[in-house]
Length: 339
Image 1: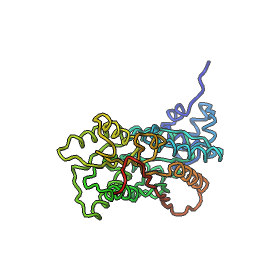
Image 2 (image 1 turned 60 degrees about the horizontal axis):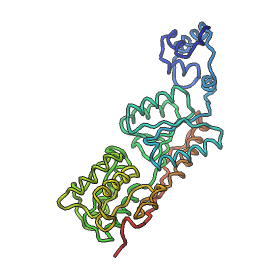
Image 3 (image 1 turned 45 degrees about the horizontal axis):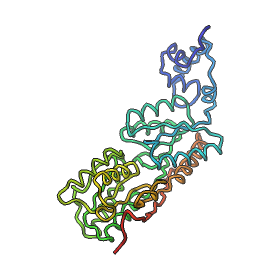
Image 4 (image 1 turned 45 degrees about the vertical axis):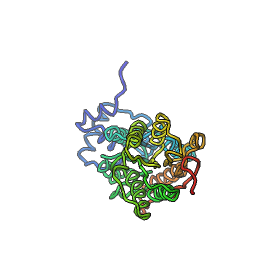
């Protein structure tokens, strides 16, 4: 039985990339008349019959959106994706979910695959390293919304929380509770959320007349195991901190594992506040104090914004704006009580 001719076959016959052949047959993006002629002749010669997705490309609509996040196991991203999916489903769109693991190469591969598949738009929580490629996609007409993280210089809609304010409030609470040596476990260097949460930590210390001790700042790369090791390093210090602020949920679970392993009493020997408010936070013993993000609302707003971008494709667009939501400090037993 003869195999059906594929887009790859057409691209090879025309001497162009698969992406370029997809553009011509989908009639989107930039291509020259010469390239268009080559691809159409190759498609005719090979009797190419596009599949459902390719037919969608031809009318510039597949009713699918791509979503790239860093860690699907994180409660924050799980809830955010649920918000995206609910809005997408109500609007007749399907969601293709990709998990980057904070790996720029993996993220780039997914971006390319989603683009070639012809999704109608993208919602991305970007890692580091692909900023220029995202800019290229946006300038090429791909509807794009960033969520959780902003890329400076990239003029696309962004849905974020006020990370610095959330961090500042948490650390300020610990200071008002009498703590003077407060350790922080930060996220991934170069990622906006990590930088802003560190900035809030430093601002709280400075406004309260406390020095910023670099020994009390450790990187956890948004990963549980690395955060656990960072917490253990704090505990091995000659003069360890009396409180910890941990900048996301997986890292908070790692820090808690370290404290349990060393039988550290919370909050008597070590107070702790985490960023993100997972469903298990009030179930720990003692219950975990957190900075809660409106992750579901972020997801719904991101998808609503993307659908607006998709509908505006080819029209005069309004300058994109950042949607900045407020986090909320939730005090439970792990941070202790103010004296």
